[in-house]
Amino acid sequence: MTEVDDRVCALLESHWDDARGYCVPNPTTYPHLWLWDSCFHAIVWAHLGDERALRELDATLAGQLPSGLVPHMRYGGKRSDSYLGPLEATSSITQPPMFGHAAKVLAERGFMPSATTLDRARRGLDWLWRERRTREGLIYVVHPWEAGNDHSPRWDDFGAPGRTPEHYSRPARTAWNKDRMYDVSFDDAGGANWSSSFVVCPAAFNAYVAFNLAELAELLHDRELASRAEQLSETIDALLWDQDEHLWSDLPLVGGGPSSKLPTSDGVMPALVTADPAKALAALRQLDDPDRFGAPYGPANVARSHPSYDPSTYWRGPAWPPLNYLFWLAARRWYLDGAAEALASRSIDGALQSGWAEYWNPEDGIGLGAAPQTWTGLVIAMSNSNSSGGVPAVLSPSEGVSEQ
Ligand code: GLC
Image (cartoon, rainbow, N blue to C red):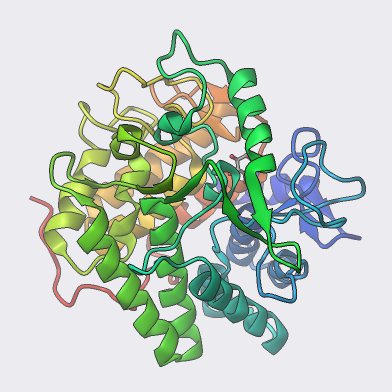
């Protein structure tokens, strides 16, 4: 074991709850199960060679509603302090469905998920396809908490308070997010299905769905899922590519405005799935460009030259370990080995410098948010770039592309 492996192992051990079968993201700040966090935890366990990978993936999907919706939270003990819908044990909204990718990584590392877990994962993706798809073929979310990046400047024009660093206030934005839950409507099973104030097809969320469809398709040899992945990725390119920013932008359906095109690194995520080398490279190269997202402990989550950029404020500029991990996968998919190595080394430096924080300032690596945070253990996947697994093969470009 390397020093990073040792540190990651200690981190996961200290956040593991054996009775519940999962790691909390942080015992004080985040004492429940969160969907995409636990998928990332399962990946970290698999890299540690620990069978708790399987238990954590099972736990992630165990709260699935009969409809197929996988809730973004399962409450550990008492309910969340925020209103998250009518259900008792789980929230009624979802989060990026990273369980398709997690299942594939686990299988590649010798931890084959059970048939029940794989069936749940497939039904989770089926639900998004069936219940959350527009006529044009994009996937939508009904609350910023579903998107994973709840204070992003991309949500500013949905009526949220505070845009520039001088006017933004985290408590005011949190209160606004809490109020938005009362605009959400639910189906008979208690799953969120629409909102009167916030419905949007985010580029990143669509990329996450397409990516997880492709990953699960490959694991299950499932042609239907593979064809959905391709279809979604083509629609993302056709409807969301922004030729001015060279990023993928979001498409608002209820609310929203120009902030949907704001240059955030979330707009790079479709590089995980696009079949278009020109778009992928134009977007991915910005992760290193100092005028865009390139920062010493980056990538920054908001373009450094943009007036909204605030390197120390939650989802308004800092670097986030799960995003770095996904960018790293995307860079490897496009054979950008140098860029992938740089992402790995900045992520490891950031994790160490920040004290394994939830997120950090991309300019100086100072830790922000909860610390330590379990998902920061993802650097273990990046710390050995020769390790097998994790490179998405389905939808991979057939030829290598030069970095120059
Ligand atoms: C914050 C993040 C969300 C994450 C959760 C638990 O709410 O915005 O993406 O899942 O914390 O870590």
